[in-house]
Image (cartoon, rainbow over all chains, first blue to last red; front, side, top):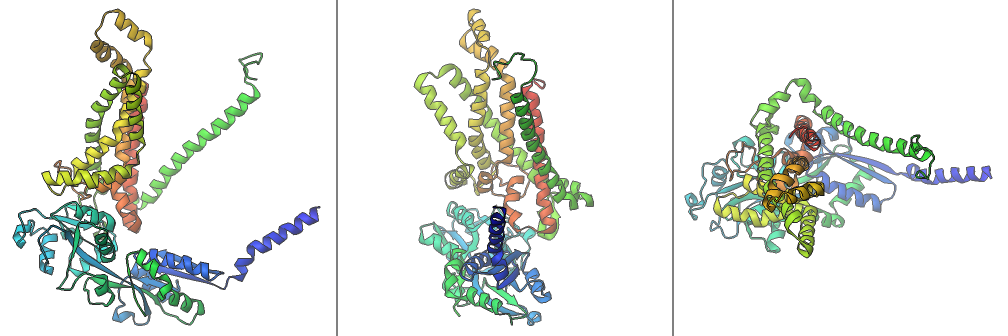
Length: 270
Length: 291
């Protein structure tokens, strides 16, 4: 009796631990908190379709993504910008594009704003739409909460510091930004273009403004002409590993476009 | 079994077992609270060890990515919203309780009580959504940007109103009937019975209910994030956007690292201490020591 129990148990242990032995590989990814949620989703699907693999995703900012990929602490770094010239020891694989559009209320008469006008609005030097040829209406400046990558890109593009901005409302995610602007005729905000397009289609009373005369559409983000956009990259130093190549290929393939779009990014065709 | 025991003075086995298990569960809950507190202190420690904790309490600028951590405006905003909400919901809630206990009868009473319980159970995010899509646009017409101290106060008042009403009703119900009968026998008017006999007799219960509602208002997050505007500044006007401590944590926690993260834990620690003070006051009030 005891023997049977014992042999059953040892069989059970062998069966349960089998995947650990059969594991054909393990990848670690670190870096940007913008890219991480998307890569986490991709990794989940990859693990399902490639049994025996394990993918670890950790955040820590684009800088950590670069450093870890260089030092070998991680296999792949996640970086939410294009690589700099000094980083050409790494290879970048773009998995998606992210664009940020300026939004106004649909009934606001203003059709476009120059970059200088946007800066002056955000630092509080212009605080009424009549100064820009619109109606006599105070401007409600909607800004993002500290730490959000959208804020980072916005500040960098307009060469601003967050402490210079005089916000009237601070929001967390894109949805809240769209709700805030659609409920206030005098409001101006900026959100991910993918989210804004989706909401406009479902009837939100907002509109996207062009930047530098280029229309804010996912199409223009995709073809790279829209200025306020950035690539979301996977970077790697040593690309000889089979599993690593497989994962990067998978992350760039059509199989994950739905995941990319679910995060309101724009898939890139290769 | 227990009832049929010969001597009710010595504890039965069942009693002993119950004693042990109940004691164990009570110990677990208090240990959990201690763990939460020590965790908060541990995460905040980098700042406390630096001696920068008081700088946090005093500073008025919050730009964590530029190294400026000042939480005084948020502490004051949290308190302002809480005081405003209780100032609105307190009188209304107590009035509802008096109505339920002394005036409403039959189906009116049942219906009103049902409304209060439903209102108490609505998730805060629903209140926030209502505030953002209905209340804020209304306030915007009065004075943009709409998301403001006023909006947050109104939404919170609505949220804690049922809590105040339910706890006050319970307090009024618990007054011994013979006190009220005595008042009637002495020929007091109904108004006199309520104002001079019932409410004073129930005041310890009412006070502790008010304090618990204040703790709820202080801790509320989702609804406030949606309607308060979240700009870090002193609560100087009703139409100014403000950011509370809870909103600050909710907005930035997912993206914070290092000092920024410790700063958010410091905000959590301050909140916990404020709630602790309110709870101590509430327990004192319920024992009648403090009023």
